[in-house]
Length: 109
Image (cartoon, rainbow, N blue to C red; front, side):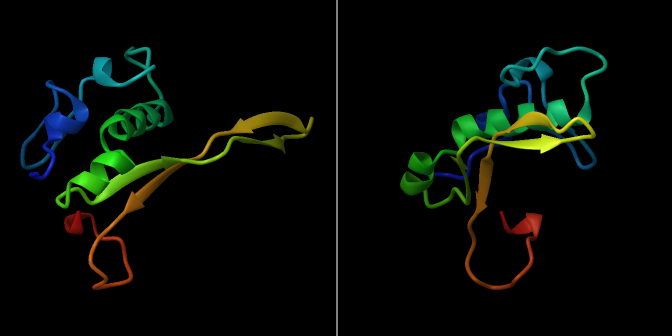
């Protein structure tokens, strides 16, 4: 199989040029698109969209795919002055490349 394209992962409205990328907010799962979405909500939407395509199964079948997502276990932690309970959801991004260096370089994927 071939390398997945930007639209394969982020939908038909995704595009890029030399200086920017565009991903349609409507393509991001469970995001309510508006003009004031937080950076964190956009990042989570992008991760969830990528997770839907970049699965372990597709990774195993496609030697050109070098990233796959795996889901961890939910847990709880306490935060703040009132020790409020917060849910912690894990989403692991696995980056796979030949063992040629010890840093993560985006150009390797």
